[in-house]
Amino acid sequence: MSNLKSLQRLLVVQAMYEISINKERIKHDSQQILRDIIYSLDLGKKLGKSNLNFAIRLLDGVINKIDQIEDILSKSFNDKKKLKTSDSMLLAIFKPAIFEIVYEKDTSKNIVISEYLAIADRFLIKKETGLLNGVLDNLKF
Image 1 (cartoon, rainbow, N blue to C red):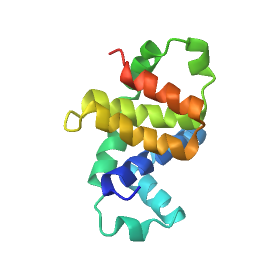
Image 2: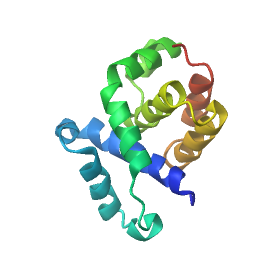
Image 3: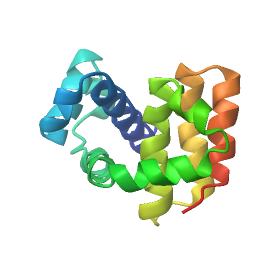
Image 4: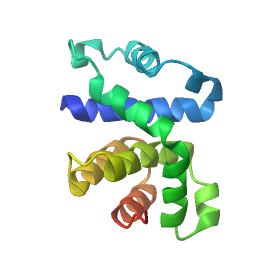
């Protein structure tokens, strides 16, 4: 994952995962959450002097639209029981991906899906990656 935008998407996924585990984190400033992740993963060199505008916009957008995003996810999931028992990391990947597809119109849906599938390959098993692909490809909003 060398592209700066791709790396920022990964940071947002990690932030969403962290928030899912520690609900108190959502009270912190998005920029601080991202900087904490950058520091803990020693990503400063990879990000260079990036201002993280894309990651901040994405994380703030997901947090601000979380109810709508979760509603879209629920409508798009055929098996509601499976959604409730889904892995926290899978859900952390779904949320910014849905936000980008629905609310950020500057990147094509196929590129967004491809980016989040690349992230999923780092953390999930093939079955979950396939589920991610299928749901994102057939979002109902």
